[in-house]
Amino acid sequence: SAGRALRHTPTFKMRKVVEKLMKSRTKFQQQEVDFLRQQLELGENISDMPSQAIPTVQSVVS
Image (cartoon, rainbow, N blue to C red; front, side, top):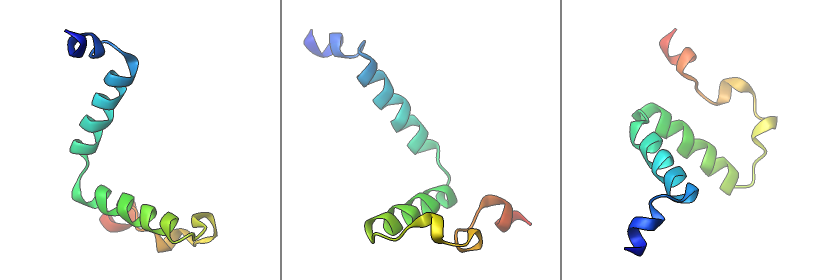
């Protein structure tokens, strides 16, 4: 019964939305996210990197 009540909380609903978005990512999008996360873990400043260093969907398609 308590578990059922938790399903109606904003936190639970937001967690479900985030899980759904993560599952819907393409492999390429996941690679981008992993790359950016790795850069953050290494302490590198992403804003200092040239925009060409991070592949985007547009650069791959064109």
